[in-house]
Length: 386
Ligand SMILES: [Fe+2]
Image 1 (cartoon, rainbow, N blue to C red):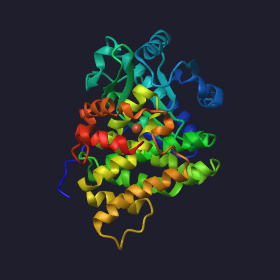
Image 2 (image 1 turned 90 degrees about the horizontal axis):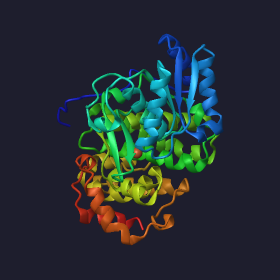
Image 3 (image 1 turned 60 degrees about the vertical axis):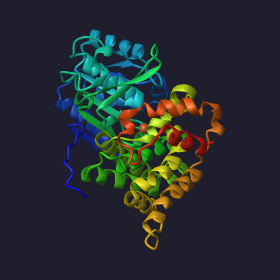
């Protein structure tokens, strides 16, 4: 390996493992927080998780107000509502609880309480000028990694586009990853959020921006997912498997935050935007096909992915070992009942050219991909997924 310059961003504090949520209460007290805004969605309220998080804070005599109007793939209007509530309430702590959507809304709300102007002024990279209100991000799934990534994604409904605010000020004061909160997650959600985490790990590991430091996190994430995702899906109450998946998702998020992701995510976005395919499912279906295309771009790393996923590759030629990573991912997906084709999701093959053109335009991600991908290559990868 050449002597890569390492730049590495992460939150001030990571609390991870069983008991992390209780520790968060202590941290809130250390911050001398008096009044917190809990940002979440109605599903998390119905599951009782919002009340659990709220109790951790009220037990420490911290007042808590609730904003429970986060929607999936939240738009600018949804975020604006949260910002208005936060500004009116003069909170000294914002706690985002959920998957990526609630965590992203909490981060943007925190930043917009201290930076002047509106949300539209900050789409882009490094445009925020000031630290926001202290934020805790509590992950309730094991997949998005949003608790450790310096970007927040919102939907611009007018432009029909997803837009990102990228800034170190989007990183939380504390990332809270407590596997206890994932024990009751349904197996279908466990499958597709787990595949999102695996995609983060494999794409960031093979990204052209990977460094030796991100490689450490990505490798361990892939190994943990290979070891424990099947069990987490088959028996959600197995605490060891849930622990492994929570840690794997965190590590994959840290690796993604610093090394970036590539063509799988670029090809997944149009599936989400045009056909509402959940992010983890879109990634999962595309992952093996894009890996098959990418493997010649970094034979050594794809061979290592196969080994980390439990394949016996010692006796194989490197190229053969690299392609074993593709079958390993397909086998894993079968075992966790993931949909394997876009046909099953009702996506028409006629959509391929338009989706391929859109994917190639995600240049921010395509630039990281280990093999240069043209529109024709993208079309071929989509076609294999039918
Ligand atoms: Fe993702």
